[in-house]
Image (cartoon, rainbow, N blue to C red; front, side, top):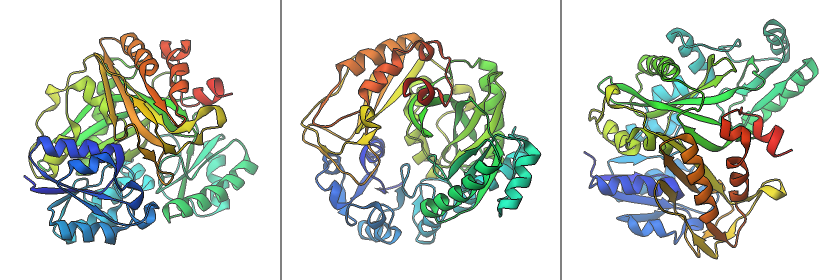
Length: 447
């Protein structure tokens, strides 16, 4: 087992990994930027090292600074969390060449699955259902026009190296296609330093359902149920839940089986997510693989009684997974609301600043994953999420009622948050019946 792990991230996920390491008796090193200096969770680490100014490109995205900290602290592994460098194949290769274990996929696997056109090629080989579209990058406007005419409008242009909704454009006609093609390539180049894009058929109102995967270096791959992530704004998830409210055990088994097959073919040996679009008839189509732990992993933990971070660390250390597929049983229902420092009433304007008072909720079935407290100053440089409110109930309606109670109980003073919007979602009749899709929020509640 590892002796010392460096956590190359910040905030909520840094604290989550820190707690797992503490329980596994593993030494911990946290890196931090000047903007995060004084963050309470840093005091819990065995060592904390400043790696630069607030902007992420000068700190959490600077591989040389992180590797210098790893050398100074003499660690034998690095956990990247999510975001930042978690899906960066070059970073994983630098770790490997430095004799440090990257707690994540191999560089080769990241290249296979992290690039969406490569992932679609592998999915085709594995027999995973795909929407009509390209498995190669689209190089020109003329090629884009020909492909769109072949598969029929509407289509969606997506960044091959993308994520988080960036580098995506929907086109319902040729004029929108050409404009969107240029915009998507420009945005992809700026966001990912790679302007490669591909095109696929656009489903008008699908659900977004993903399978939680965890694998080890002994060839074992297990799926820990599915999550429904359909409540989104601009392709950014706001609410996630497990299991999917419209899935049967048979639906779950079918999607889980193809996800496992794909990951086995890729030689996958860590936590990850296979994401799918699901139409009204519950036909599902492969979208992408996220080769990292996800923000929403707690809902899977709650309904399967697993610790995915610990399993991820064990797998990276060469140990077998502490559970098999037969051990994974779905129990009850879990919902997660991302509490962001944003003002929904002002077009989600960011609301960084000092939290004057924070009173998190508690009680049966409530989990609050967060690094903030009263007096904490939310910096302007990073994602606006200040915490994740997770609940668990025997039934979905039990979980919704618990979430409503917890949201009403929670108080955050000094900044604006998304709590009012989450209450609106939880009380919405369509959400309560499970009759939603990925455009529901923008077309209905945010009009």
